[in-house]
Structure formats: C-alpha cells, structure tokens
Image (tube, rainbow, N blue to C red; front, side, top):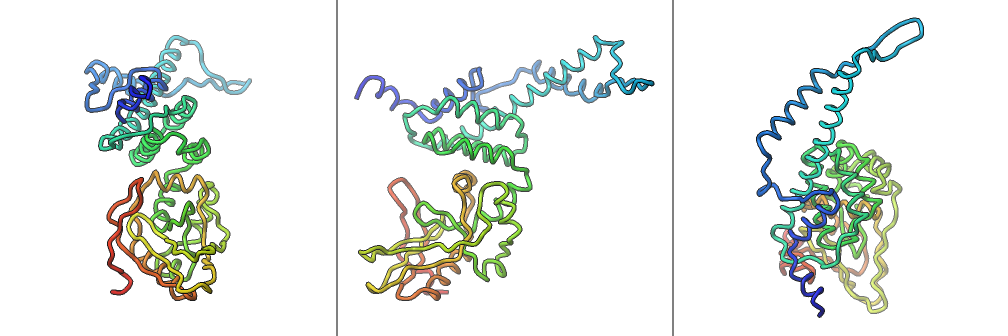
Length: 323
C-alpha cells in the first residue's frame, strides 16, 4: 500500500465529509457542535430579516403609459434589494449547513467509509439542490443522502437528486406513507398488488400514480417473477424487519408470479435514504399470500437481528407458525 493510500485509509468519515463540503461550498465547514455564530452575526441576520419584512413594498407608479417602478428614491430601493439578496444568501447558507450537520450526525457512529472521494460535480449539484430546502424533515433526508454518498460514492444518481429537488412536501409525505410496504428481492423493490394491500392497508392507486409522476414508481401493475434456477435453490423476500425464506419443495416447483407495483431506480435510492421501519403485519401477510398462491414451496418468516455488508442475521423462529 502506498503512502497516499495509507493516508486515505486513516481519514475518518467526519473528516471526509468536512473536506467534501468545504470544497463544494467554498468555505471551511465545521459541524454544528463546534461551530459558533458570533452575536454580531446573529444580530445582523435579524436586522436584515426585519428590513426585508418592513420594506418589502416597492413603490409603484400608475399613469397613462401603464405601470412602472418609482425610481425617484433609487438609493433606498438599492438598499432594499441588497438586503433582500443578502437575506436570501444567508438563508441558503443556513440550509446547506443544516443538511451537512444532519449528514455529520449520520456518520458519527460509522467506523469506516470508502476512500474514494466524492465526485466534485456531484457535490455542486447536491448543494444547488438543497440551498432552498428549509423543511427540517426534508433536510434530514438530504443529510442521509449526503452521508450515503460519503460512505460509498456513486450511490445516488443526479437523476435522484433532481427528482427529490422537484418534489413537494406532500409528495414526499406520500412516498413516506408507501415506503414501509416495500419488499426487497435481490436488487428489486416492489409492493404486492393484492386485495389485502388495498383493503387492509389502504395502499391507494392514487398514491402510486402520484409517485409515478415523481418518477419513483410504476403505476401499471406488473407481474414480478421469482425463478429458482436449475439448482432449485431457495430465495428470499425481506425488508429491514422481516426475512422471508421461500424454499422449493421439489424440482417441479414452477416460478412464482406476483402482481406488483415496482419502484424505479430513483425510488430504490430514495427508499434507502428515508430508511423507515417496514410494516411487519403487511410483510407477514405478503409471505402468507405467497405460500397460499404458490405450488410446491415452503415459506417461513424470521425477525432480522442485524443487517451489514456481510449479510443479514436473523433468528431461527418461524413467525408464520404462530399466526
């Protein structure tokens, strides 16, 4: 290992974040717990905010030629414009640093990250996307995305950043309501489209359509196929709470067909960023549905203990037996 590689390996997640953020926003970034705003700066921000609110009316002149701005007091208008721009830039900086602070908190308990640097263009695109995000919950989501990119560069695409940037709070909330029902199988993410999904859990088609408009899901119901291969090996369907094992009972086991709504690539990435707890009863209902509607398969469900790079650790108790 070269000297440069050794130095890279010694860089902590927090140090990598600070370096990436500082390079993108053009100033030395410090986490919130060591960053102190001087009283004079806080007072200055308040004065600017008050000036913008108290002087927001631009003088308008109505005459025979139409409507125009009264520029007789040009100096006063210039001051107000300067105050407005300063207030906007300070607010943008506060939003950026709030997102970076959330990312820092996400990385505090992370032992190691990839030594690969985050793409500089990605960082510029990211901060251009978050500068106008003042909602606290959205800032947390953006913070998780930044932390995820610090841990493993190229995790989140430009397309995902653009889609999240253009989403309203209502659309984000719609995604948060649907996300706990997502099932994982290999690299795919989907929701089973069955009667119990709609009737018991209220997964509405309108919500799926809205998320399709956002580019996160497909509203047309597809058939998701699970093939066991020539070796007739078991497969799994899981989320962050339940690990479902599906085992073929003989070599004649046909492939499983599941009616489903699928998540797009951006939808998959946003699922990882939001990281909500899965709906356990729904997951168990889905596994029971697979068992009842598939031939020659054995289905078991197990609570997950932990998920890591090495795989999924789950207990041996089959929850479905006791339902």
